[in-house]
Length: 162
Image (cartoon, rainbow, N blue to C red; front, side):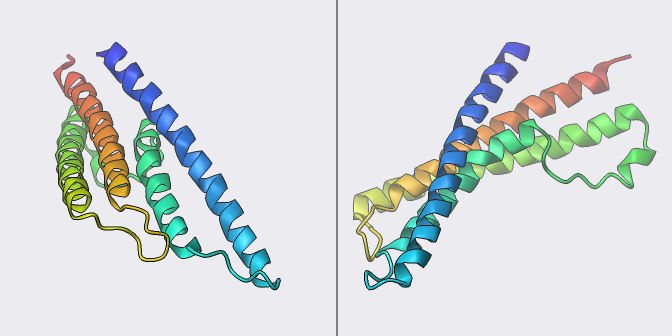
């Protein structure tokens, strides 16, 4: 189980690195667009579309790593009063439901990617296809779902401890 978790964490770190590149590119693009607006060149064409695409990839690819490092907010004021086994059981249930939801979002995103690929939908200004964004969301949600699944198994093992 630990080997699987380590492999998932390594993949999540890789996609988080891509997310960081998206963030850097996003910042540079917005800054360049603001500077260009003050010159005779004018604004950079398609900046709005590119920022949307970059934000989608940035968020999707950072999801899994954020769960690995426990960067999400957890409200524990009620659960913290229960025994450790009860807390682990509640964690297992929450992680399992989260994993199922992430896998459903990933599955539907793949379907959207296929649909938009077949219809040939593209962005209005730069004519960039939409389907890669849906595939990025599918990958990010699938990774998050896998992290939640390993968290579920870890919590179940805590419940089973004596």
